[in-house]
Amino acid sequence: MTGERVLVLGALHHDVVVDAPRLPAVDETLPGTGVDYRFGGKGGNQAVAAARMGAEVSMAGRVGRDEAALAILSTLDAVGVDRSLVLETDASTGMSVAITLPSGDYGAVIVSGANLENDGDVAFQEAPATVLLQNEIPEAANLALVRKLPPETRLIVNAAPARPLSDELGARTDVLIVNRVEAEGMTCLANPEDAVRALAEKVRGAVVLTRGADGALLAEGGQVAGYPTVPVTVVSTHGAGDMFTGALAARLTAGHRLDDALSFAQAAAGLYVSLPIAQRDQISAAAVAGYLAY
Picture 1: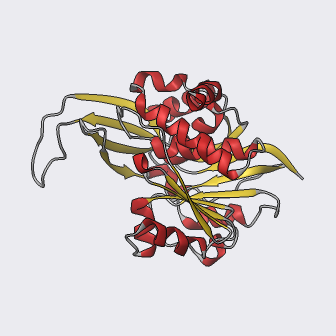
Picture 2: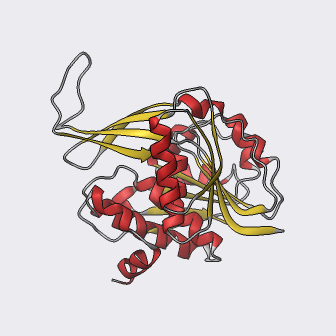
């Protein structure tokens, strides 16, 4: 018996986002044009995205006993994410530094801190309908939680950052989500269709490969289908993958088919990247539905 809840196990970060004309070269100090401090971590971002898309969400993670942790917990509270499974440790709260470029592209470095103490030992009275995992915490933590799940709990794995998919995790994965870079890194295949087919052989369910403006590929039941995106003017792509993944998890948990949930998630990510940073916290399921209809 499972409840209609999404449980996200993953990293929580305090993000420092710097605007720059380009990425610096080795040993170069490059003047930037702006700085922002944001809630982050793939686990945290996806939990917030799923909650904004209407899902009941619990977050299981680790933070330190510092000011960065207070800001993180405040954000989870503001969007209604249950944080009773977010535990404090003596390590520093995780953080990242991202450099965003005028094109909307970005690069980032993460320092995991307290996230490395996440052991996946999560206690729940009622098993969640959906569990969402990423690769910013140790694989052992992900597997520890997976081993406690009943067969009927849907498991979504966002393989970001890329690392080899173990046979045990693949055999339990219902939906694997990767982008182009992650797919190539996991398969050594540059062609996205070849990569998504190869990954589909490693999971019990489906594989979604996102390609930004080029749309997504869905490998399911031995078939590969393409899903185009709606063209948008991009402000910044930073966080788009987390919005996509959180939206997909929310829609699947609400009972939608995978193909419908994928189209919705693409619309959510498209709306997300087209908005200024300050307006992104206004994105809702209703706004995405309207954007998709338009």
